[in-house]
Image (cartoon, rainbow, N blue to C red; front, side, top):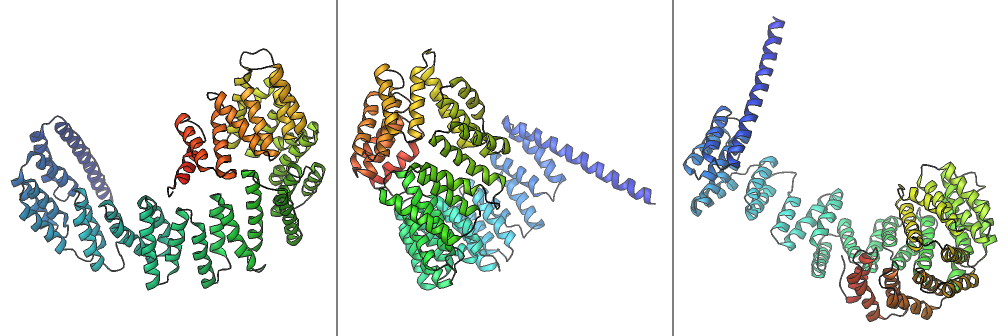
Length: 604
């Protein structure tokens, strides 16, 4: 008996498989008929498939679409009535029937069937979605909205707010889309990320942001829900209004007694956007909460990082700024009084400040040598500080100790980005020494680095060597320039200038001339000689418009006019020239953003 049952089951499975294969082949044949314009043949074939599979909605739909092309409305009405009798709960058949009437320009019967479908909506979520999708498939967005609006009333425990927001956006009603996105966010805080992602597509113009903020303020007056404040802060961040974002987030933090958690997140966002003053404002609020806040030392550290970034990235600082930052580093380390990774990072920044800005290289080396003795640091962390220590020994002139440290990191972290950085440092040492073949060989390997930073730096140096050597058998100009480059790194400014002047005098009109003037610009910036810096960049702009550094010169010239001289017109002229003349430049996106800001555009 058991054998018979098994045999019958196997037979049924085989039969169904064969039948499915046959139907698949028939469908493909029908598609070929359709492709060739043989719609009658396709309809005859699809009719057989439909009749043989009366429970399949998919085969009905294939047959229905073919009949629409043939304009066989009598057969359409016949099969739809048949489907309605079999599945009265499937309201999409009324949409199909209504659409066939629309094709016949019978608007009365079209509306009758569409309205009938909507009137029959029950309390099942799946039915509502299915019917709305049917209207969307024929691009009737308003009726799809009507379906969800009825579903919103009929279906318990599901709002359709997200679906309505999407449809209102697609139909061009941005204001109503905003309303429903706000409703959707208020349903559940977990919806907030989806809502903000969707809103980024909607809020294009300044007027959109103003309308959205107005709606949020009105909602807050009715119900002061935290999610509304979060949406408001999110929108302020989109338009870079961190001052307003901070005011709102601070008020929410105080109300909910969160010890600065949300304000800290806002500070991180501002830092990532390089809005350092705004970030410092947030961090200061957290510091004022006192050491009992779990974010206290994070905020103290954040202030130091932002002040350090402002000095490194803008070059617009005074010696008083350097001295004050040094004092704050020391105060932090004394109060923190631990020997962990965070303290090591702060010490690393202090050492870098001492070496590159206060020119106390021996003191900086002593700081990092001490860090490397801390037991709490692992091999990867110590490798990071060894790289910096190697740089410091290079500044001091101890090339052997520098390459030893780089090689230690290379060996210990061979397959990690920090190991690749160490190899790049050794390649650059070969370049500094004038051993360009060795440097080029190492750089060729590093150009395929998994670290984007290392790969880009390796490519840049490799291109520089190739471009300026080429077929030139005279190595002396490149050796002079590499020596000047090392002098600049070591802060031996007089030696650097002397070497550059020798190069210009001995090899006039050499391909390196624009690089020489760019290095002179870097020296001028380092010496706070801004007028000279502008002159060097303007010289490159006028005389080397087709060389590799031409776009660099334009960008940094624009930056000087914008941030130091506050000359908006000249800054815009530089950025516009860069955008138009150097479309493939790495600076184009930032130049375009700055140009738009200076022009008065509101950026999202």
